[in-house]
Length: 145
Image (cartoon, rainbow, N blue to C red):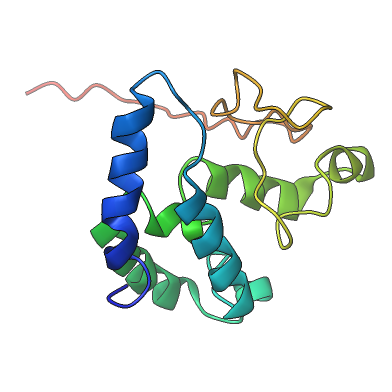
């Protein structure tokens, strides 16, 4: 964080200020950080069977990456809501869904993309899987005082 992330926050914010609030492109410094994270094995740390670390250790790393909310979670591919989508695909995706979303969560971020590579407007919407929702039936009993 001290040597890679914090020093480029100025460039990140300058890019955002220059482009304006309606621009949704990713600043080049983020792609540079992503490449460095992959090289160092810091990609998809939230998937225990891919990263080799426990969820407890992953939680500590998420806290540290939260010190730079705009850069670190995205650079490590551990940002919400994408992590939840990737976990669902990793655990429950059909072969068709795996083919649709490319190389899988271990290799790339799962983001809404059009066939030509452009971001889809609903990129931040949760992915729909064929996993039936878990429905919990709660029985509430009224207790009279």
